[in-house]
View 1 (tube, rainbow, N blue to C red):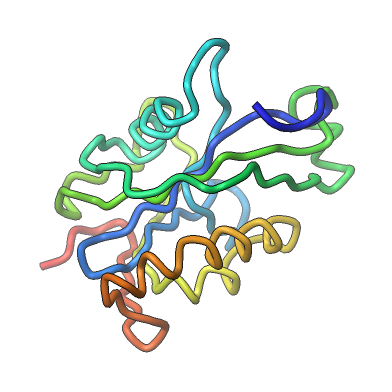
View 2: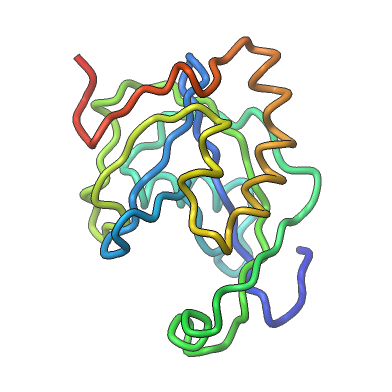
Length: 173
């Protein structure tokens, strides 16, 4: 695993539907902070297994297949007020291995009301809209991940910003 001791090792998941739109969830209690699923890697756990586990834990589905893995680890620092509150100040940020997954289910398979919910709403967005939705301290990492995975999405002829579909946690008709 890459990263220094003061960065929490974790994974991130860019979950894309068949039409190329990407899942984002609104973090509970944050107002309007949206993000893709992410979470820590357990001791002895392979990053790709952690990605699948985190997706299931955060959005209640395992209906996806891994399409790509980021070439390297991405790192961001938390704002000092958050770093001191989260993980009792043990980490200054996170180092993440990102995975692009293709969603094989239907909207009805997604359940953000999990045992330990992290999101209070969710929606599908075009990949190039992600940077407008994420909190500022994660924008650089999201930009790197989008740059790396966007070629794969474009090769599959997936849509861009003008094809945004919003879903506030309700299955599509």
